[in-house]
Image 1 (tube, one colour):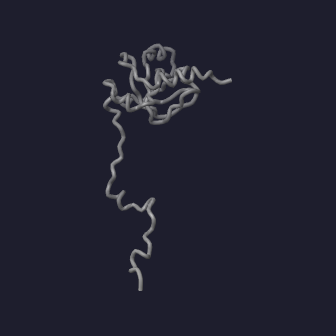
Image 2 (cartoon, helix red, strand yellow):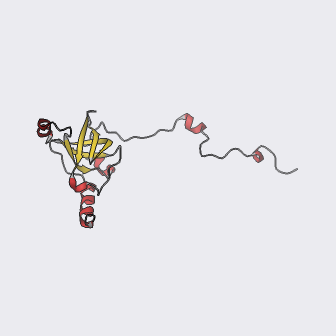
Image 3 (cartoon, helix red, strand yellow):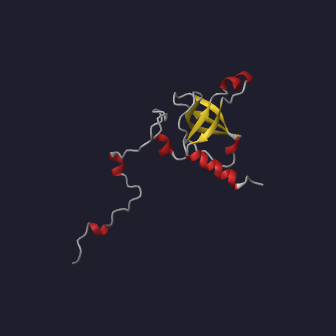
Length: 142
């Protein structure tokens, strides 16, 4: 049997609003790859990759796409490194409304929004365009 809807909606609402400020052990990270069993490889703003675990309240309720952003807590990193665990932190929130999160003062400058600029090659491309018709070259009428 699945989780009650109230738990799903609560997790959904929590991920929409960003916190007012981050603690010293918290950081925004970009998801690089899903490893399975609720483990994800994430990239910190300093380009360091880490393995983090998804908090249990988000499991099977919210899915994280590759390239998305999450809020990780690295506070337990020292404890986990003593036990020999490869998991160094925990995902405590998922960035779903990226526009709102980017306005916060703690959003890392290293995570710039990806924009695609049109180049001259795009203008010459015929992808998605109809081929030229023969009637355009000919004059109308006899």
